[in-house]
Image: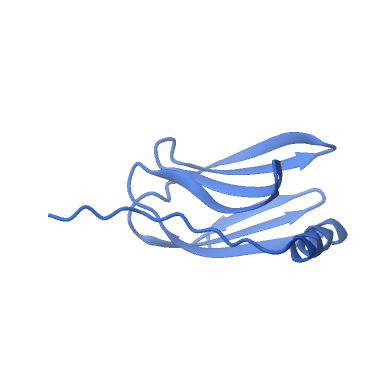
Length: 113
């Protein structure tokens, strides 16, 4: 039986594009991230991340071991994170919507809060 390995995917943009994306995030009071994902049981990984060098602006990850979705961000220069109890690592396809505003964080998975 052939073992299938997951492949990491990364999109790299030139510095001027990266700066434009960061400026868009800074100038908006609210934005929504949408994704469709399928995660194997007992795996963990980053769903989406925007970072420059070692400075991360936005990172959404799923832990199949802890059965949670974590959102990592910076607030007033300090790293913060929020966790949502949810099992994505079940081999099924899921739709994720994460809305971020100045005062709220709202996660929907498969149209459920």
